[in-house]
Image (cartoon, rainbow over all chains, first blue to last red; front, side, top):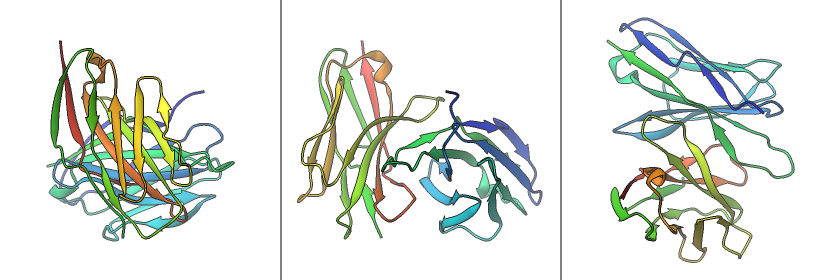
Length: 114
Length: 114
């Protein structure tokens, strides 16, 4: 089975621009979560989607948004980029069947805001 | 809110030796899951081991085992017969039974020396 894939792997943007990141979960996994990883703050939860519905949202401003499609693929969008948004953005998928709560991570998208 | 604390920012061990990484957590939930993830330098985060809170038996995966002390809210990871490929950042993570997000510790950077 293919793992979680994320595109693009690297991205350089300018302050004020917006960006869209994509995540394809493992086949059959219906839950997709997003995390931001920075040296200072560590790993922080952004949001989680299941069946195209956002069920959980972390403590991030409204500039961070996401969505999930019927095939479970997910995108996250960051508008009006700030320098502090530079981070590794990780996507994780979960089967959520028979009590399986393990999250499997993709390689991440490295976003640099200049 | 749940918190996860990893008190050892860095550790080193000689190849073939055993090392234990510490993790404590705080929660008021009775049903939850604990995980150890490994993130090698510039590589993907992978799941090392998981533990369900309702199980008294400590989880084991080959050279990796945990010491789960529910009353003390402690969840340490023991790596036996350390290998060079074990060099990585190790994250302890908590997931509540009714929640869909992972709360991570700050991580422990483990270096295995030849």
